[in-house]
Figure 1 (cartoon, rainbow over the protein chains, first blue to last red):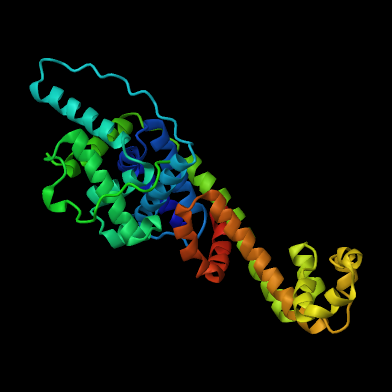
Figure 2 (cartoon, rainbow over the protein chains, first blue to last red):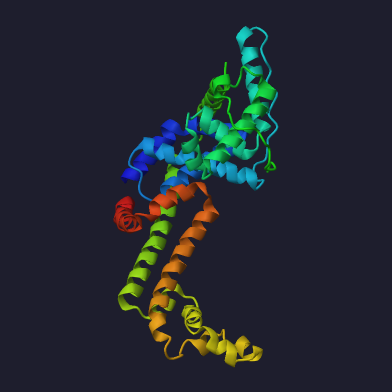
Length: 181
Length: 167
């Protein structure tokens, strides 16, 4: 087995669940996330320079997932699935609150446009800088700031002021000029 | 809990749920990538050979044969002789002039054809590649943009890999 195939096998075996979770944040759909991850992995290894480390390959795959999630959402490919209402066991005290918080977050993320959602995930999950987010999504820095600002406003409306850290509140004036796609 | 922690928590939960009944399709995915890799290296290899051949021999016929498209070089020759055709020919002749057979043999266009043929071959190949990229996704644009810088190496490298893969 060639080196790239070994890297790919290791990536799929070790990192696929985490990548599906990551893609879920971007899509809001479990089946879409799985499909997205599979496509991104295959495409990453099917072309280009052979990836020699799992870490490098995962970085490529995550970038591919973020971009493809935005593209699919903008072209209306994503079909939102009806999330099953989870039965919350009353005997586990913290569990119900956790489930509810998770549902609230999913609902809040659903209010974001595809790009707002993508920049939010890249910012709050990947801890990327504005410049890095702009590079990944091929946007201007100012555009990324605007998307982040709009997303922060929407998330605060849904989750409360405490959810989005005050120190991270953007200083860019919030003007929703682009229509949601 | 801030939104960052909540999002990571959600991603972990989904990932764990997926891991519990993850499909065992690693071999299928590797095979899919291998097939895609063979197609990709074949395409890149053809592009490299085509552009190298057209650069080496410089014939517009060779370039057009490699790209299997019409000889676009006359477009360059039109721009080289800008006003003569237009002023002499009325609209009926203008409609005839775009046919490649009518324009290609013109004397004086040979010098331009040499460079035009070579670049047409290059453009055609790069167009195919970029069209493929855009059809796939913009995310892989990142990957492919990195790739394009090392096309020659990849073509050689992966070609040498593929027989090894089959063995």
